[in-house]
Image (cartoon, rainbow, N blue to C red; front, side, top):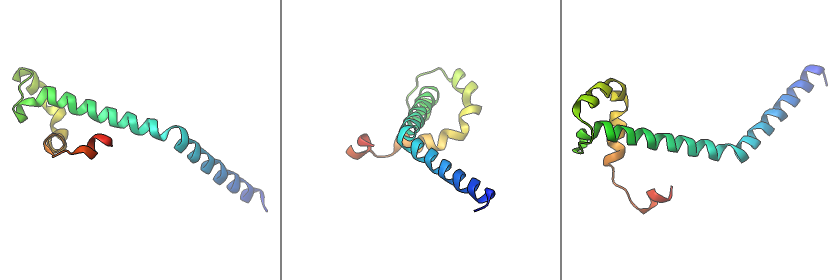
Length: 92
């Protein structure tokens, strides 16, 4: 076995070990952080753009000032806010 092959085997072993440790320790935390971030973003859009759903919370002046930053997310936000929910959604 050459030196290059030994390095390749060691690198594969190290990468596999790193992936397993990440799966055991960090994956759940990363998913929770992403889920929390998504919830916070949707709450922010609800507060600022609630007029789109008939929930006026902020005066329109502030909503219009923030509109350029929110436009890319409005379609997915509306879909998430207006979809039907059942008991299994609360479990996930």
